[in-house]
Image (cartoon, rainbow, N blue to C red):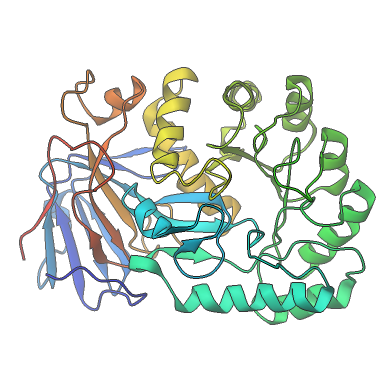
Length: 397
């Protein structure tokens, strides 16, 4: 079976059998009692024990060989430009490389690295609409890039947000990367965006690139964006007392990123845990950036937060799947009937000290990715980037 590159969905039935561990992506029940999953036309139609699943007349059958199946990982914070290229590091193929790290969906926090990025309002809107259209039509090896995230500039009015929404734009770039940096200015525009169904993210901490600014807790709370972008800094974090204030002072998404302060990341996780609000925690890489591209960044965050944050591995995987899907209203990220058939199949890395996948991640080791599936189509087999897995799934029919 040839691996597919485009956005099309699998026509017909996909059966994945002999699954050793099925992770749901849902905090309330992160492990499912199931060894078989069925999808048709790119959507999950059933899962459970093999004897209870309709597996007949399958067009494609995958033997998971006892490996773990999880929803495809979601990177909540990336900065794409156009195509599978980033001018930030003059690198080609970074999105495809992240797929080899289990990431099947990416969310743009603004196409800010575009050389000559327009700052006038007409240009801001034109870039966002173009990026949304381009990444809808172009999906490297099937990866879903939710792009077209305009950066707020002074002078934007309600009609601009209505026009963006009518054109298909569903995201705002990081508030604070443009000329709008004050809380009172951002609050009005965030409210306009929300009115028209556009979700917002706010930069948090010190400036990351020339032109961005320092955004403190008071500004974040006043702006009231939907996602507290890189609460652990991108790269420079706020003081821990301000991070606690953000966790306690609002109910918005708590985004922890790879390209941030690790102490602040652990602190934010612990604050959320103390509040009983782990459902607010989502993960991103904040790449491409000055520190480059991290194809294994989401897996590294899962292992880091599980091992140092003393969180069960199955819970940490929810941060990168179901939590993000729910906060961002995505149709993937959870093993539920009707959801997109986007999966990553993994096993413990060879020679890990952990006896199985979950224990190895809990000990800080990265799993080995054996296969990725998007829209019911096998996109990659054994990962070129992760350590080799003990077992890998195979296509048997």
